Length: 292
Image 1 (cartoon, rainbow, N blue to C red):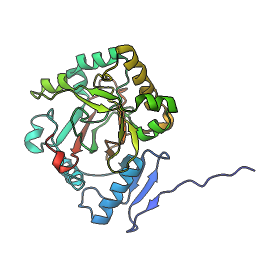
Image 2: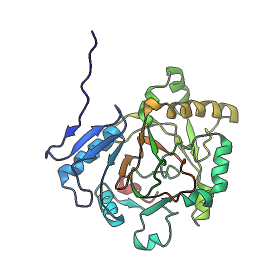
Image 3: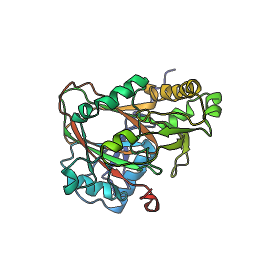
Image 4: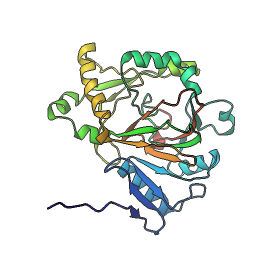
């Protein structure tokens, strides 16, 4: 006998207005019934935060919000973090607004070439080069190509759970470098190279995650080149598995809000020379760590 499961049509909010429709079992959900251009009530804010913790990244459609409204929304979940490479003169208007522009592909062509030479797909988390990275990010579509330019997010916890027991044992206790210095120096900013545990425990959910930034020249501390690459390839292969991913197609009015501690992401650059532009607001972690 064949059993057909009923689709999950979404979870209604306590107030009856917000809905959460999962896109994949553990990663990605569309949130509806909320206008991000207006202040959230406490209940709505808590429901959205709970959805972010559960699904790692949530998406909002048809949101007619500007940069200031985007920042006001993000600020309801914590203090904003100003990235040192934030675009000028935007920094004078809203310091936390960071343009993610296709033009950067040409500006940092040599860095992208180096990444490509290393042979990794650039799955990454934002500001992982800091001792305490930002916990959240809100990304807003500004200028989009007609086709292409999707973003992929990976459930880093599910990637860890899917590892063979032997691989888990080998990775446990190891630290990997997050080296963003060359890009930071271009912006007149310096920061020492940081090494984070490959297997980290999420501060709020308590779940273990695989946490490697393949855009920042990863190297496992204390291992030779061959063994480091062997173990990093195991993590890389986990990130690339479709069953751990959600892929989001941007449309005008789209906004993504993700937990930077629970997911890594990958921008699909398949739109040629089109001047694709998104704007990102980062949310700092616990206030006592804001200056680290």
